[in-house]
Amino acid sequence: MSRIAILGNAGGGKSTLARKLGERHAIPHFEIDRLLWQEGWVPAPLETYVEQHKRILSGENWVIDGLGHKNSISMRIDRATEIILIDMPLWMHFWLAAERQIAWQSGKLDHTPGGLSAMPPTRDLFRTIWEIEQDWMPDIRRLCIEAQAAGKTLIRIGSVDELDTFMQKLR
Image: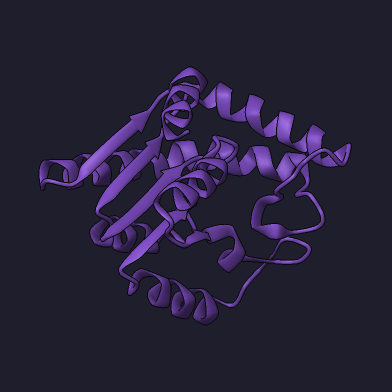
């Protein structure tokens, strides 16, 4: 049984890491952005998101990356056997998100968030990154620390170097 929840702000490498972990452990990978968004960055209906999220969580093996709706994060943490928190400084999330936007615009992005064809407006993306850091991350950090205290495995990645080292170990 391996249920891995990867959490963190936008641009931090959650989906790339999740794909590699899914391959390494031969378990299904689910990207929350695929549940959350429809083409044009239109939010999916809440009922659809909730239903798909519950179905995925009921599985015995998975790796799930992303945040989704705020109230669904604790359910993921509760069900996970391992939590990876990508918790880099805010400026690094802005930097990495900008690099992704540039790669997307130039057609050099292999995997787009949520499999969407159009990139999000950069101003909206940066506003979201700021709001997630201010309004969500304190609670996410607390939930992760509580889960660790309850015996769950928590891996906290605080820099690109730490992420690269972790990914190297997967090879």
